[in-house]
Length: 379
Image (cartoon, rainbow, N blue to C red; front, side):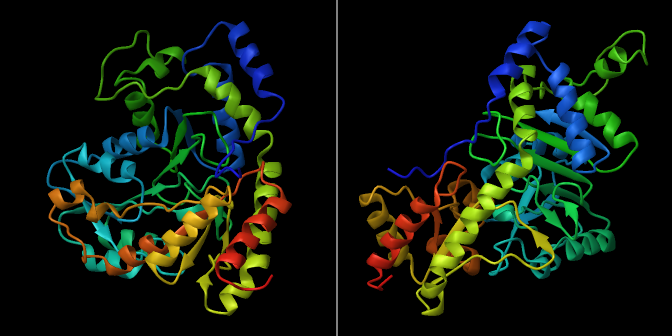
């Protein structure tokens, strides 16, 4: 069986976890949490990084930070995970779904402009598969309409756009270190505040259950108390210890995934040249982290049959998001199938192939041979 995902494990996770235990502080903001904060801020070049229990938590924090309220609207792609929309809905605001670009599957800036109203408060771009959205256009739109930009970079850790790391370009960035991502701690995330000032100070407060405890710990106040809304968004220092071991292998992980990604491209290119499928595209101004490798079949039926064929050959391949606008919750907001035809079409034809650091190049060859065989093309 060729598994769809397998987390990368270094030889240091257990050592650092044991060290965290021996230090006697297992809750949030311990020794390894601080080391992770410093690593993210220095390596990814952001003003403030705070580990969270998940990217979902980071998005929830971001929605509070930008003061979303009932009646506000936030523009985002429908082709995303539910957490992007949940963060907005939990504040009483409305997600406004926009079309995607057919080359990158990221939100289409032209459709963002079409969806802006006097209720629009923010744009939540989602960097699909570790490839950046057109952030120059999105930032320009946001400035023209005085909108906040919150990057959902759950899939984009260590990827770049015009030399800038994803999650550091908008006002706020949200990262994921879930087991399925490139760099993992089981469950975890981070929120990045990309400007100095009050936003970073308030992020600390919201993350600490609405208290000024961080200021108290630093000796800036003589006692701490409830000063704002918030919740418990701090992960255990044990998880941070695991994550720090992953950070020390940042380049190794990326290079392994890149070699697998490029091998897929090389071997599957003949099928694209014959018009049997479409391969993913990385724009020249983007540096991917190779989080996902997908192919687009010509019809939904072809996708489903190929997925079944690969499964019968011991290969776990899978589809991805069901567009949020066509979901039961999406219909509650007045959406229906047909509202975003390109998103619906691509979602129905997309097939994700296994890509992880445990995958060998001979495994990639085996997967590709199964695809060639199904399509009755000689290797």
